[in-house]
Image (cartoon, rainbow, N blue to C red; front, side, top):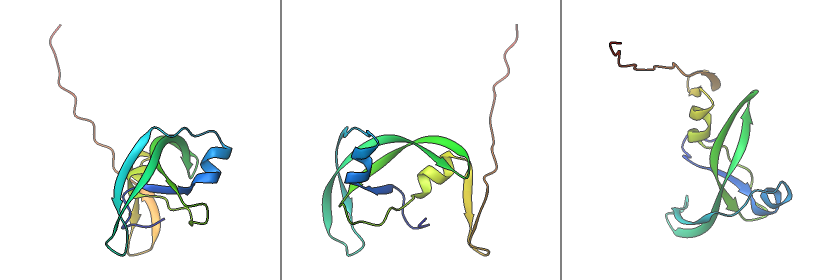
Length: 100
């Protein structure tokens, strides 16, 4: 987990093993400031037992997997930076009432 990373990166060979399809290409800015083009796809992921669907970047085969904040948030978590742990994300749903 990297609280500075928006997107999830997984080695391409691991994504291929589990059948994640490549759905397009996107350019990302790397930590060194350079641009790189990567294949992207969508996968069902589980974070502490909560399943969510999120975008995954097909990284180089030797890249360390990186869980991005967008997947964490869609699973209902956020990082508590003080204690460096996952906590439940407050959920707010705004519903517009209608008359019947």
